[in-house]
Image 1 (cartoon, rainbow over the protein chains, first blue to last red):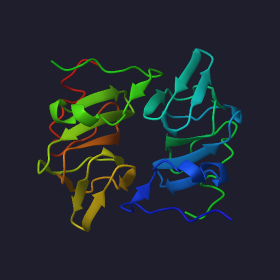
Image 2 (cartoon, rainbow over the protein chains, first blue to last red; image 1 turned 90 degrees about the vertical axis):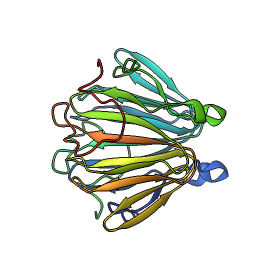
Image 3 (tube, rainbow over the protein chains, first blue to last red; image 1 turned 180 degrees about the horizontal axis):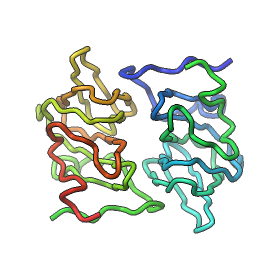
Length: 128
Length: 128
């Protein structure tokens, strides 16, 4: 069952999970009409297949190492690295190690216009 | 002189600055029509006075300790904590220690509709 979303003004932790990382799952941290924050947890060598979202987003590596694969090239992110992706940019994620990533999505009235999926139950699936 | 902004798909570091924190200044990391990421560096006991932005934003404490002060209450953020603020929510920041914060702003065609300022030279001032 999905965890309930945080509310605006709630303190949300995106600290490294450390030893808990291997047992952790991806969650949608908070979702409004305008933004959604996803905490993606990937196992080493797990991929998030090609997908795109309508608007811009940022991908912030919190722990471990992950590659962002786009038609224009590959970006290797380590903890403390982030990239801003243009809207509609096709991208996949490749976990080099167990890793956790903060995905900040801009929504249009609660809709990210996902093409493909991150494997996270998102707003339309979960109580907000 | 302001540093040049990063471009979409550039790798941006928001790692803790550690020993360099006291000598560092706030920067605008990247700015598009839709988003702006600010890296705010505050000295202990330095405040960012009350201000508001039109749309939602997130404030993510990267190092040190900072308070987010709103009419509804105070949130104390430590490294790895973040909050999502509703649009038009008046808020001030109070640095409890030297600290660095990642501010993610949603823009409307490059405009955050700032009322008051964060002390960071923003898009209209800096080359993008």
